[in-house]
Length: 113
Length: 114
Image (cartoon, rainbow over all chains, first blue to last red; front, side):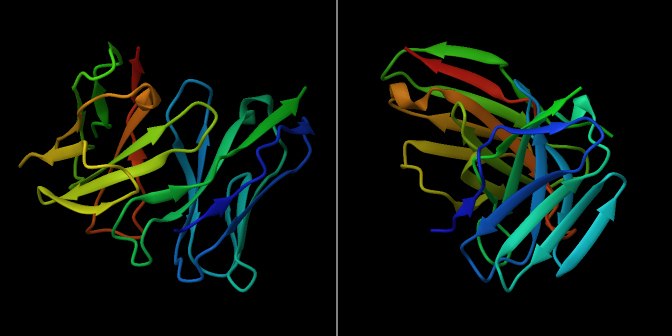
């Protein structure tokens, strides 16, 4: 059974600082990795995905992947109060990616004004 | 572009009853996945449908079943409801023709089993 581990938090970060969210996964065969943001009472919203080792940047967000360490992270620069949400890390349920996603429990992020 | 829609928004059932939840996929998407999200947890994969057939299943019993229709919309059926089935049920659509399989979620159906 694939597992995705995240620190549930809450992670409290002052406004304007960098928020760092971490995720580890159990299956070395995982090929792609997804970060979703979920506001309270809402459905998950895709922020970004990564499938190559290294960094991928999109605006204030940077995803970092280290397949050797089975570790993926999400950095949020210049954190804003609107970034306060639960961040979910996910990998494909099967190695080929044809199935659904296996999610972690999520990290609750609080940006303090 | 039309997003993913789900109905109903909320539902209250009693233990032992049966329920059907509905999902319309995003325009251009041919794959639908269903998830169960309990309070304080991440979504758990129930199953996925592609070309009207089940294409992968998570660790859920057979009383969770589904359908996909030619227009790619989908239904989730749950028989013999249990109290632990109370959760937010999420539908996500994607396209198997594009990688790497980003999924886009609907607003969810909140099911309460009494």
